[in-house]
Image (cartoon, rainbow, N blue to C red; front, side):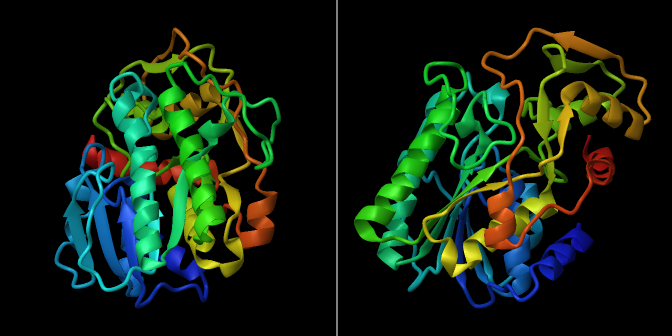
Length: 333
């Protein structure tokens, strides 16, 4: 992982957050902890806020003795106070995101993306800090336009099982734009498409498709596909995603922008299962289960805006990223 951190910093070129004070909510989570690593290495003062509901201590334990890293255990759906004289950037990533958690923690998910977002926007307003909100491709719902551009308004079921996540993220986006229009706050919104890599939870209950398939394959258990497996997703390796998010956070001209960050290469879930099975050298059978409610049939980003505005596009091919991820999972499963 150290090589991957160095790769991100190299790919960022002259972009550096050295001496910046950065608050990262959900900083002990999958993406948040990678951002903490990069910014600590660059010399930023990093404040990691997390209630550890889905984030893990193990993701940030190696940073706890760094002078420019601070961990605060808190629930950002309640207002928080910082003892900092200044905060330059708030990156708001805190939220459960697993489809298998939507029926277990819907209220917590809604609170993180609505009340939590407003609390963090108020904090950004207090410090006159730049604000990046990590939204999701889920705001598009079962998209009818593929590849999906940022101008597509979505096809979402607000009362379905996914509504707690989809609609709270949409509300979070609306809050960001309200603070821009009413207070001229410097906000920018990332719509993240499926991302994978080391540090995704492997405890069997998290439910994201790649860690679930890898865990099942390494244990030679049935690889379970919800539905017929013909539904598609587009998977972005974590180093590409982190580079895209940090570019969006950096450029002055991104104020008020909404940008898809993801890999435009589309693949069926069945093909994904077959590739993972082969990489893991697994004897697992592939088992088809009842489809998930409101599961989008296709998911693929139009990244034209990211290319032009951020000078960004993903570099890691799927099989390369999956091999890295499988090797990491072998150590934790």
